[in-house]
Image (cartoon, rainbow, N blue to C red; front, side, top):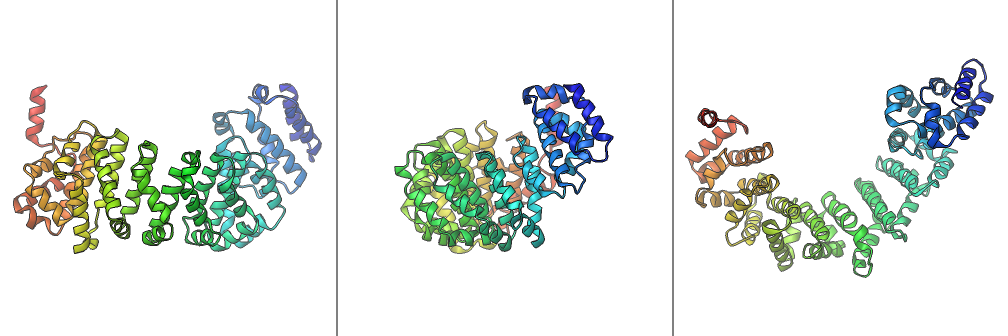
Length: 476
């Protein structure tokens, strides 16, 4: 069979109109199972097929696409990259968009991704949008979409990318019914498909015009209702934590208004608190990430503070997890706490400084000792997480006062022997930098400490003193 394929390729190269020979080659390739096809096509050169794509003859191009589709399934990615890199790139930018759309259905994800990227570029012009959504290409997209669940979501991915470009491109996608079909997936029976749909909708919500469209369509309310009904849905844990709560409402709150989102969709905030107190580590982890995301903004901090005792209970749980939870949850707790406590210099009003100080003191009877103890444990990720909390409070006057009043703390900061990994040295250097850059540090910490901090900063994160070097060599 390899010989017949080789002879057909030679015949195709030698005729002016290769339609008949292409048809014969297509049939020959289809007659061989894909599992056995690799041996038959390995070593053959199909450059002539790629070159025949450059034609205005529709039938010829479609035959070439069918042949190449079969070959792509048989050859390994390494072989394709080695022998046909330039040809593949040319094929992905081919003016025949039908061929490009069909590539979205390719088994190899890398080919499909390239096709999606190439087609999404059409959305940057009205002629491109007209070509894709107001011609026979729309039917081609819908036919390809019906291939499988995986391919359907690749088309959704393309549609969401196009929709995110502008309100005009979103309008084309909405009028083609793709968006309404995606929204319908949110309430389907397959929970995994539902989870993927929520992820797609979340991506659409990244643009302002996308969020406006989703609000008009009632999608925010729909997902809020999904959160409220989660207690009665035994499969909600498969799609709810990461997809609905953090990825959707958490990001939405950051992009728009935390207060507006939490007031409009109280189920979101209540669910986050509930998850933070849940025994399920998966629930807790998402809640921690979401609280950190929400509390990273001033408005988010104020929204959390308004909940009073509810948030205090959550903060105490975060403190417990940071001190004695599983390592992953400890790290995520420390990161969330550092985000909650961070205030940029221009945000440091009297009220907000009082808020962050009150939160820090809620962590423990001796919060400085608690965080410092965590930083000395033999886990680099815990050390760095603790240092980020010190960095967060190090820019704030109350934090500096706690540092100078805590015995030996400034020596701990200036001690280069603590934390020997690159990440630990970088975290310490960031803390020193936050102190030096603060306008109140010199007065609160004292000139002697401040000068030593500036020297540390000037020497850089990886500085080793001559005395330390000599001591190390002597030990050898």
